[in-house]
Each structure stands twice: as C-alpha cells, then as structure tokens.
Image (tube, rainbow, N blue to C red; front, side):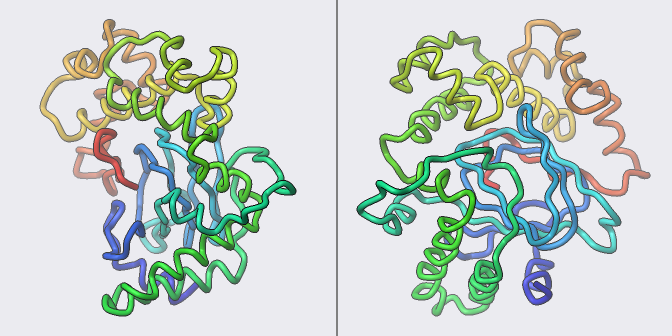
Length: 299
C-alpha cells in the first residue's frame, strides 16, 4: 500500500489518466461530485463518503466498491486532506474482458445480492495486482503485454468476492445491467428534457413495474431522481465554471421553476446555489471540489 500511494501521489485533484488502458487515479482534497462510469474503485488512503441516490456509503483505505452503470454521485473527503489526501485508483469495466473470465457453466453461480456500492475489504492478492499494474506506468513497452493480464487478475479477484455476482451481470449482453445501461445512457443524453417512464421500460424490454424495481436496485434511484441528480450536478459545474447566474442555469439544465431548483439544490448540497458556489470561489476556500462535467465525466 505504501508504494501504491507513492505512485498515485502523482495524480492531480481530479481523475488522472495513467497511460494504462481503462486505469485512472485521483488525489483529492475536497468533495467529489461527478457521474461515475462503470468501474471498480479501490481506496488507497483517506476516507470518503459517497451519496448515490438513497444510499450513503463510507469508504476507508483498503476497501473497494463497484459501479455497474453510469451513476451521478456526490461525495465528501474526510480527515486532514492537506497532509494526507484521498488517494484512489479505478479500473473502467469492459464487459468483453470480464466475459473472458467467466466459466461456461455458471449454474451454481449465486445471483447478485445487496448493493454494489457497499465497501468491501480488498484482499492482499488484489492489492498486489494493483501494485504491479501501477508500476507499469513507467514501463509502457511492458504495459502493452502485462497490462491486460494484470487487468484480468484484478477482475478475477473481484469475481471471487462479495460483488462477483454483480460483476458477472455487467458482462452479460442480455442481462439486467445491459438493459438498465441503455436507459441511463438515454437519460444522460436527454437530461434537460421531460420524459415518460413507459418508453424507457420498453427500451429496457421490461414491464414498467419491473423496470422501476431493477433501475432502483442498480442505481439506488428512480429514473426521475436519476435525471434530477444529473441536472443538479451539471448546474453545480456551471455555477463554478460559468458566468451565468443561478436562475439562468436553472433553466439551462431543464428546470421550469427557479425556486424549485434552489430548494432541490440546497437539499442536495446543503446551501442555496449562489452561496454554495461562492464558498469555492473565495480566497479562503482551501480547495475547489474535483467536480466533473456530467456530460464528459470519465472517472
């Protein structure tokens, strides 16, 4: 873990490319608001609370969690981040790679249970594989050959753990993850527009009741809550990096009522829009959040 942390200390205060396919790293000192793409996330140092829909989870060093589909999330770093920043690595999930690891006969495989967002202690074998993966950052020629093998090893370790059933579901082209993934992608592309749930259920090839149930089991949100989180995360990004006022931004992200936008924004982030943005723009603010644009987030 010590060597892993020293490597990841090279990261920026955002998800940072490592040069290794599907592998990213982060060194953070503030809150973390973004859309997480399907990935396996390993915490190396510090603590973070992540709010995804109705679920709030706290992650400590040495734990990992799984994100099976795109999910908007808000987060908070805990502790003395200036001296000991939050460090983490992630592996973006490729269903094709996962499928090569699955046994042909899975009759005895347990179905996915519980939440994939719950922290799971990383076994020593997984941490060792991550260390060998991150060492390859300095050896690009070796990375070409060894990187894919180590990626498979990391995924193999995860498949043996409590989240293995969920990870297997990610690889199935006709499974519920693939069905829900189609609808989350559609909502991300049309997040400013009103929509009806019935066409999304058809898109997922499910009844409306089944779609609601599976969508919430995977994202911890209803479809409408999912859209609302996307709108609010996008609004926060605009408030920090755009010159428009809160009312204009409310209409830009799809709200028809500025007062409703302000209420829902304060409920999620703890302060009204203008006051929340101001605390990250003042000279006394210790650091800006590593908040990613929801349209381009790749963490």
